[in-house]
Amino acid sequence: MPQQPMMHDTKPLISMVASTLGRDQEMRLLLDTLSAQNDDGFELIVVDQNQDDRLVPILAAYEGRFPIRHVRSLEKGLDRGRNLGARHAAGDWLLFPDDDSWYPPEFLKTLRRLIATEPADIYSGRSLNRDGKEIMVSFVAEDAEISRRNIWHVLIEWVIVFRTETFRKAGGFDEDLGAGSGTPWNSGEGQDLVLRCLSQGAKGLFRRALYGFHPEEQPNTNPDAHISKMHGYSRGKGFVMRRHGYSLLEFLPELLRPAAGIVVYTATGKQTLARRSRAILSGRLYGWRNFKPR
Image (cartoon, rainbow, N blue to C red; front, side, top):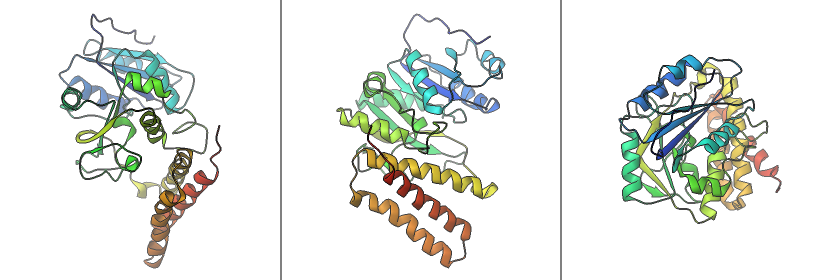
């Protein structure tokens, strides 16, 4: 049977929502690092989209270390799970760990310091691999306020912390975006949500001292799968930029960079990288051209 929510006398300040499907052992690292936070002001809501009980013994092993809610869901999709978990959240703040991400021991201490000393509605940080190298996003080199201009260089979904009121006012994640959405738009849900929050007057801060860890993808292991994935991510980026009114002039650099990559990699005989650049270019164009207002 699913683990029942633990009862507590005080409302947890931070609710973490991990939507998961097909992973079990990877969750142990996340659970271990949450146990190491030395903080009793948070809860973890696990939205379990598996059809079996693989997570039951894993979550049971952490019972009593910190509050865990095990929520079953027959609906698939990363952002459907995130939104469902957020509806169960009791905290004033929301964080959405990936099921294979993990955090340094000082993560919550750093976050609480930011909340206390630099008031905002959204905090974002960096993604690192095991060796401390930045991955997934080309992050800005200095702390910054989140804006339309830098939003593609300050966000990774599992290191974004939302004031719960801000998240709910904006309507949560768009479930037609992101992994498992069933649409062509396989990314951009974090930028889409934060842009909606900013349009409603929310303030967001990117702070480099806030970071989490994630396994680094190894493109050479399966180049075709990686290229297909990048095409899906690129479709999402083009779609979200068009949705939020970015001009063609603002979108143009997103085309010129992969176009240059095609030329350089083809000329130097790096055909796999040239194919990757071509997939990124075509994906962004597809997303831009196929956006349709609701």
